[in-house]
Image 1 (cartoon, rainbow, N blue to C red):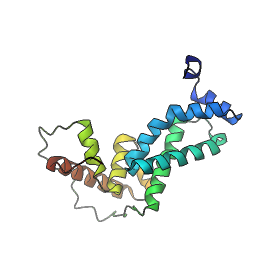
Image 2: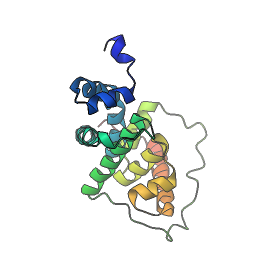
Image 3: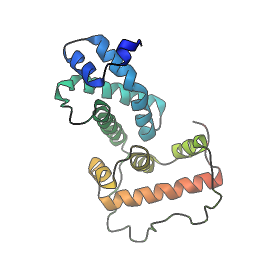
Length: 187
């Protein structure tokens, strides 16, 4: 990418795309594809599936580009499409989170308490997260990495806030156990 194209804002590229400029579409794709792939991968967990989600997301984004009103950044708008496509993908795989609101009173708010001296590399933690069940990993990723509020996650997944909270706590506890037991492996 030369310096002239590097300085084009996403909003300018969107306007050029709307005028039919395919090179502007390619620039938008190149600028955002890696970050959006990483978002999809954190949720769906498999590279092939994340690539499919990414492809579908960009197709939808370019088809819906006229609906981008600039109320948020293009990146935030695109990320929402990727997150929604990732969640839809999990639903199609029948990864459903049971709404357990009202049955979660016995779940502690905190995980294992003996985590002093509990330090791992980022790569080790990533590998351990890949071992979580899909539902746990999705909630954990949306909350910790994508920085959605639990209420937003509940709305996206069509479950109660209590279920999100419980799923997050269970995911966190399971992740700690996986790390302590060394039960993670390369995917």
